[in-house]
Amino acid sequence: MLLRSCRVRETHRIFISSSRKFEMAPPILSLALPSETGRVLSIQSHTVQGYVGNKSAVFPLQLLGYDVDPVNSVQFSNHTGYPTFKGQVLNGHQLWELMEGLQANDLLYYTHLLTGYIGSVSFLNTVLEVVKKLRSINPKLTYVCDPVLGDEGKLYVPPELVAVYREKVVPVASMLTPNQFEAEQLTGFRIVSEHDGREACNKLHAAGPAKVVITSINIDGHLLLIGSHEKEKGQSPDQFKIVIPRIPAYFTGTGDLMTALLLGWSNKYRDDLAKAAELAVSTLQALLQRTLDDYKTAGYDIQSSSLEIRLIQSQDDIRHPQIKFKAESYN
Image 1 (cartoon, rainbow, N blue to C red):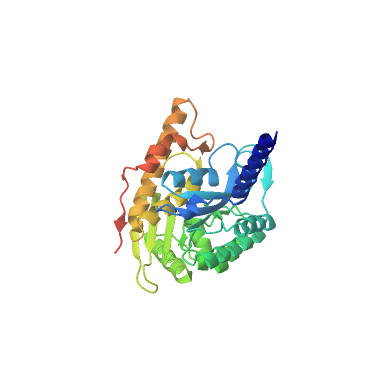
Image 2 (cartoon, rainbow, N blue to C red; image 1 turned 60 degrees about the vertical axis):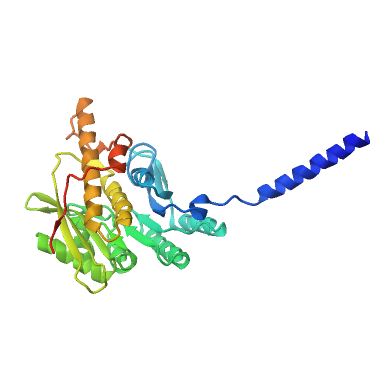
């Protein structure tokens, strides 16, 4: 009986000792053993079905070797191009609560911040506070901003967001990826030629970011990407263009994917933005062609509505893109 009592007490001591060990949280391996690429905080929209926002950005970045922590600014059943959608919208206070939770557990160290569609001034102002907080922890944080404002002459967001982006966001961004319309909104400068596109990049450099990629510019029916890298403040930037084929269809999530790819490859080729853009464009075009082929195989009219991109089926193109679209230097 005494022996059994001793065994019970010993078992109890072992249990207490073991439980005390588990009171200490295990190390976060993405912090303790960081990848060579980086750790990304991605604040974007989310849909249950389909690939837009974080659903379009997180997976490609993970395939390229990044640890990615997504914050879903909205959670919708599907994108808003469908006849109806349901879901919830995260407000600025809720975003900040998430940041406080991460900081309380020493989890707020990131090498990159990625932001996409933001629908309100209050949320955008909170994002600016997030930038400030992340840079207080890691002063070398790279902030990649896709300033989603609109396209083809039409705003998607409340007009008052334009001024906040122009006056507050652009100055703190490391890389900016607007389309033609968004670049015009941010600079107040009309883009009707390649020279205008390059000048818009110069104006954005003067306001803040060292890297600018205008992801699509329509010049006389021809589609271009224009990129610009100001390697030293005040020096003439390295500028280039990539001619992009026009595809007679509309896709969702391509801007979110493009910005994620530019983040991923520009970090791997830090002094060669043109190379990063070649890889990003070649990946995107291969994915779009696969999407078109699959819709045609399914017997669907590709011009009848927006098309959901074939992201998962294109993972080999994301990991190992074949460069079929070359950059032409302006310098």
